[in-house]
Length: 174
Image (cartoon, rainbow, N blue to C red):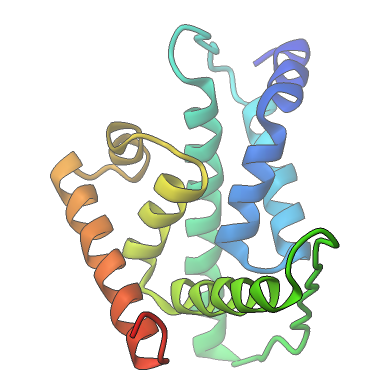
């Protein structure tokens, strides 16, 4: 890939790729590393970028594969020497024009849903993130995770059901 093509890609959908990395890694530092590695991998590759196809999906796929590889490496390392991540900071911001009570309730609901999604198995979490956060069509998701579209739909359905069940257990939606 040429540098000018990569620059154009970063300008056009770099923010979406970064958000996807954040959802995968759930840690800002790791997400930034994954984001940089994604574009570096694309730059180092000799692939031709087809602007008629969905080039953003290519970068989602590269990021996902790099993340998956990192997860495997971390799992091997964890088996040898377990470690714990102590840095868990969340920043909550309120909009001034909103009702504070509604805003706090919405923020709590978003936090709970995020926690639920983080604890879902990877095979369900990734399609949910791609479908709802990045509005990727089922066919694109199927290509990226190398599964049939029916499997993606099934995982989306199962993920929605698990989220609903957990929220009901926590007292939401009653």
